[in-house]
Length: 496
Image 1: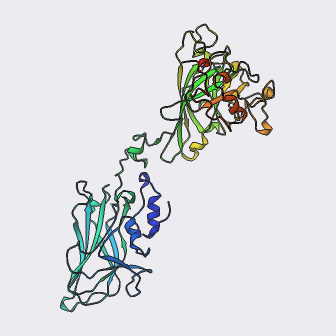
Image 2: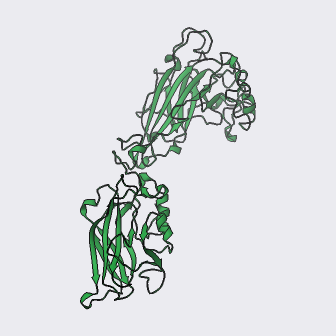
Image 3: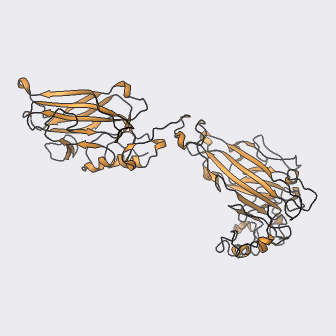
């Protein structure tokens, strides 16, 4: 937060760049140094018969001070300065004042009052409550001080630190003569709680049950101080689609239904926007393969030790699987999580070639897993941009045979011996991964739910513009997966 030491345009900027959830901006001293009263009124200060002056004889401190009209009444509503809505944090108000002439007055009185929040009132202000005052008179030969005086008032303890909002009103009143007040450095202890964008009404009073600094109405976990926000992809209610062709490095039948998953991710962050946990829903919709495939994710460039626990994986004691106590795979440079070691053990085949890929065959209910990955907090906490999911297929229980999305790097356990074979054009030195010699991929990630291909039907026959999109490296036909007849041939798509 910017350091706001004097109440001028700086404090207004400070307020506008801090949200309600972190509304801890102090109400700094009102100095008039902006030289323009509209600056302060824009920040929700209010004035009655008070102007700004730069006349040398009238200025108390700096280049500008405040100047009252000639008082004609002892009514506190005649001439005043009123603060924005604040939460009062201390019981001492201070200000500086002097008079422009020592005489030409009978009574001069400075009155300190407060106004409570009153929702029933049009302006949300209660009637004023006086709590202190100081008086000067010219009776008995007294004169008014024409040199600066430091004035202080004690705020009632009942309105200090009680989580309610108030306005403080300082009135400059009097009778007899024309002598005016010069005023400067009004200091009121409190936290700024006005909203300039909403007619200077009070900001919503923060209810924060778990005291994490995030208002309950903005906190997805209002009773959990370790969690505050959900960050969904592709959305809170929608799913993306992952599709794999498992005959890499050859193209095979290129029907992209050897593994079909729907997914939704949620990076749960705390009040400091650090990731507490990653939650992923994976739904295995189809396996159009005779292979015993596994499915895993790598969190690219993330140290495995930054993960404290993994739950929700579905494994069947594959001979190649070895995990650390925190649930990540052993022997990896980056954090790897084996979600399924053998998908066929969880989406059972009913005796057909593939599952849920041939029209008329017995349908098998999709298998759903809810993966949760928990991360270190404190000094080792990570941000949302540090959690980057790299999903991949493990082919037919061969641990080193991984199929990743195009452009995604393999894990440190992947065998490089497959690179460049058959149709594969992977060139690590050129940063080319898992693309064919004609730029086709073996895995796809679509940020919406889409139908997949009937068994044995070439993907390009179901999604007619997919080849153009792939050949252009994504530069054209980016809508190839959408529902228009120009893009899809529904006769080749499996209706699940």
